[in-house]
Image 1: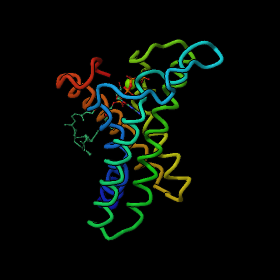
Image 2: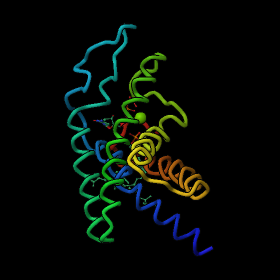
Image 3: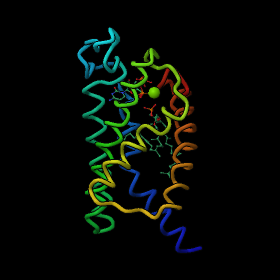
Image 4: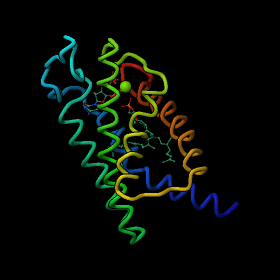
Length: 168
Ligand SMILES: CC(C)=CCC/C(C)=C/CC/C(C)=C/CC/C(C)=C/COC[C@@H](COP(=O)(O)O)OC/C=C(\C)CC/C=C(\C)CC/C=C(\C)CCC=C(C)C
Ligand SMILES: Nc1ccn([C@@H]2O[C@H](COP(=O)(O)OP(=O)(O)OP(=O)(O)O)[C@@H](O)[C@H]2O)c(=O)n1
Ligand SMILES: [Mg+2]
């Protein structure tokens, strides 16, 4: 049992930079759209106004800061490597799901159940695994559930705090 808890804690720490990089752009109210307002071939916005360069940079800044702190704290470079890749992957995954939402005609901020919760997690996981991270399957699955719960909870907190105009 101790083994499993150890692995779970390690995975949670490995994802902390991605969680922070996904959460920090919420503090921004406006910015320069990553798609510069341009439409895709289908006549709809490529990403929409919810994805800005400022949000991307702020997310990367906070994500890498947390990844660096974990590296210093644990003296294990892998937290920096996988944490930073996770931060980038979280932001890219979020952008990818926004791209999908626009393609299926969902306006900015429209709910996309499970997609809104897992977009950053899947993007982060893709880049972390691509850079060599190999978590154990079962604890990783448990973490996926924890992340979805955490996401629902923190989005409600962000909504109550007036950081988001939708609670998802
Ligand atoms: C790390 C573990 C296992 C537990 C942490 C305990 C916990 C529940 C902390 C809550 C954090 C909190 C009080 C947040 C309040 C305000 C806030 C920043 C909410 C962000 O919610 C928005 C959402 C992004 O929306 P989107 O996905 O639709 O784009 O964030 C998604 C939530 C997560 C990524 C999972 C949980 C996030 C964290 C544990 C990190 C908390 C992040 C911050 C406190 C913001 C970091 C910002 C700065 C200025 C460093
Ligand atoms: N790269 C990013 C990601 C997020 N945000 C900010 O964080 C908020 C919440 O992000 P998210 O819920 O992913 O965006 P939505 O507004 O829901 O837009 P979408 O429908 O595309 O998800 C966005 O409104 C935006 O203000 C940002 O500025 N830049
Ligand atoms: Mg969203």
